[in-house]
Every structure is written in structure tokens, then in C-alpha cells.
Length: 130
Image (cartoon, rainbow, N blue to C red; front, side, top):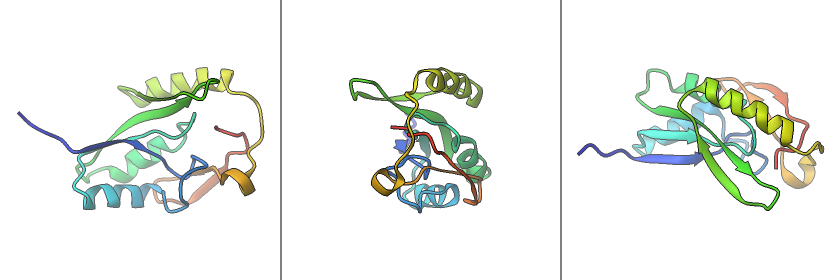
């Protein structure tokens, strides 16, 4: 039987609870240093950084699964994993339609950054993702 080491609950800098160091190349580096075979990127109600982590992991041997941590109105947190980035993007559309419209308060909750595969800043997500 083949076994794998996996961490299926990884946040990037897009989740307001994540540290600013949680950028794609450092996530990949940390996973490899810990001899992890598979990770899932599961930011809160968001998927904008999944592809960047997948690109950062190309050729490394690390498998990056597309995912999301969905938070319900009852404050239940569900880890959702997807077979493809396309499936995740379709799910993101459904989340966007149901997520309450409120602005993030970075001074209280933390920043929400979208980055590229090198960790370079693309934009700040103004809508609260929690």
C-alpha cells in the first residue's frame, strides 16, 4: 500500500487569518521541507490564490489540490476539495452569489492579498471573506 503525507487545510495570504509569509513559493518550500506529498489550498470562501500555488509547485513533486474552506451562516467550516481548478472556479461563482457583501476590516481581521506564483502582490480583496 502506498502512503502519502498530506496537509489538506492550507491558507494563503488571501485568508485574513493567514500570516503574510503564506505566499506560494514559501508554502511549497515548507511542504517539501516537511516531506509532504499533497497539500490542498483552502482559503476562506475564496480561490484566487490556488492556481498561483499550483504554478509555484510545478516540477517540485508536490501535488496541490484545489480547495476552499467554506464558512456557513451558522459558523460551520467545511473543507471542500475539487478534482479540477475549473470545478473550483464554478463553485467560487456560487459562493460569490451567496457571500454577504461587507468590507474587510484589515486592522481587526488581517489583510486579504491575491498574489502570483512568485508571491508578488496583485491586489487586495476588499470584500470580507469570513
